[in-house]
Length: 98
Image (cartoon, rainbow, N blue to C red; front, top):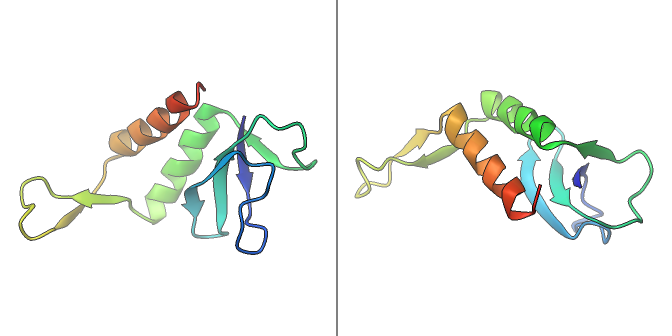
C-alpha cells in the first residue's frame, strides 16, 4: 500500500517499510510503502493514480528538474515535463509491485 505520512521527529515511522519519497514542500508529508498491519488509523492511503495526481500537483508549483542533456558540461538544469514526472512515479510504483 502507498501511504502519505509525516516524519516522527526526524525518523521515518517504524510501520513504513520503504519511505522518504515525493515530499510535499507545502506540508513536509512524504510517501512510503508498507504492508504492515500496524498502520495508524487515519493515515492517508493512496492508489497509484492518486499518487501520480499528488506528485503532478506538487510539480505544478515546485518544478522537478533534470540536467539538460544538451549541455552536460555546464550542469544546466531544465524543468521536467509532466510525462517525465509521471514516468518516475510509475517506475517507483512498479518497483514495488503496485
